[in-house]
Amino acid sequence: MHDVEVIEDAQAAAVALDPVRARLLRELAEPASAAGLAARVGIARQKVNYHLKALEAHGLVRLSAQRRHGGITERVLQASAASYVVSPAALSAAAADPDASADRLSARHLVALAGRLVREVGALARRAGESGERLPTLSVDTTIGFRSPADRAAFAQDLTAAVLDLAARHHHDDGRPHRLVVAAHPLPEEDP
Image (tube, rainbow, N blue to C red; front, side, top):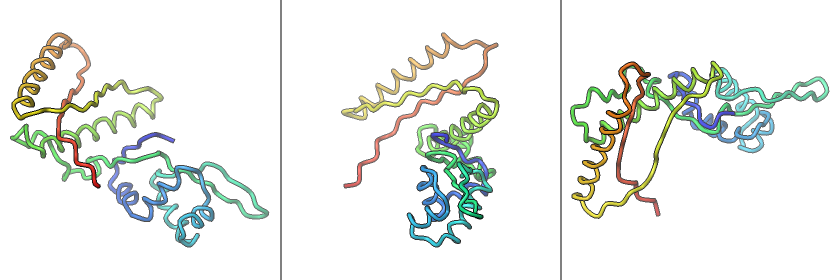
C-alpha cells in the first residue's frame, strides 16, 4: 500500500469521489471482505460488492487475500493507498495553468502552481514506481509569523534574493532541469 496515490484518470477520480466509495476506500486501509465491510459500514453486501468492483476496476483497491469457506471463495481487498490526491491531469483541458495567470502574487496563481506540482510529481512518481526507482525530491515546510505587512515584504525580498543566488550558484546548463516552487500563504484558521 502506498502512502499517497495521485489519481490522474478522470474516470478513476469520479469513482473515488463518490461518497460511498470514498468511505469504502477509507475503511479499506485495513483489508476486509465485502461481507465484513458491509457489516462495518451498514450497507448491504451486494451494494458493497457493486462499489468494490468499480474501485477495483480503476486500481483503487487490490486483492489482498482469498479465503476458502466450503465451496465459496471470499475475496479480501485493501485500498491501494492510505490516501489519495486527484491530479489536475484528471481535468485535462480544464486544469489550471499557472502560465495563463498574469498576477504572480495572486492566490489563483498559487493554486495553479500547486496543481501543476501535483500533476508533474504525480506522473513522475508513478513512472518511478513502475520502474522500481526512487524519485529524488526535496520539500521544505515551515511556519513563520510576521508582525506586519512590512515584515512580510522584507522577508519576501530576502527570500527571493537568497533563492536566486542559490539557483545561480548551483545551476548548470547541461544539468537535468528541476522545478523549484517557493510558496507562502496565511494558515487557515482552525474551526472551533
